[in-house]
Image (cartoon, rainbow, N blue to C red):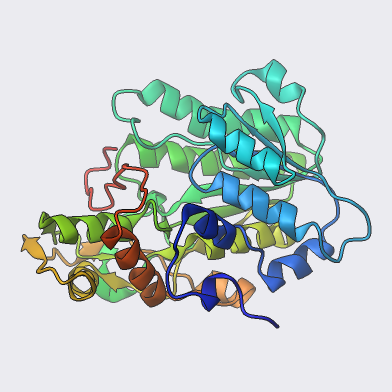
Length: 350
């Protein structure tokens, strides 16, 4: 097996190279999709992770398949360059408002659906829309695509804050969402669970915890604060994270494991990361002295990746490598999305 784009470079010199690495299919994904027939429709494909996931599916579809497979991406596409880039890579885009039942009805009958639609940032103060998107839309989607298999993205925010020493929440632990955003995400899961059972829809629910790349994520937040000399709050002193390419490939592979009732899987990295240690490493790489504030409370929003490791194996890219890439990216002043993750938030307000 050849080395991936991600594992064969020491740093990214451009956004184009970064996006190429983020959308490169793993060999495991190519193998999975060869045994999962049919077109793929990505709902909510215009977000941070959606474009690279859709392009990854398109690239994987070019290999080892008995017949051509179409990849569709549906979204409002509020950023025109995103849609243009998808088209350039052979993804068929469908601009639409997914909350419009008529627009939903006009979407193609794809046997494989990836549900990525959701609202997080800006949800405080816009709670009705948050609940409509996160908890009402899944019901509409299940009725529209009752003959499809569905991989539905959720979040580790549905878990409560747990003692760091316990090793993170597992899929069998009780939910304990903090704040309306997290509550609406649990609502999304419950709606998928209901319709999966009631209509015998194969579903896999992805509880994703902190997919990271060079332009956005917990590592970018920490690297920028270290570089700027800004205080880093240690109250929630631990987190989990996974390279976005690995998260996308593993999530797409769950098409093969969808079931009724749904399979729930935490997708994240295999280790619990220390905010202090990661910031200290950024300081070493960027020749800065991190500034810390507060003390660790001993609890954090962390998930265990044991189930995903058994089903899908380990991520191909280590967080240590991503830390080095991120430090280099920030030192060179490269493009970021300018949207902090607010990962340290403990009141559930985003």
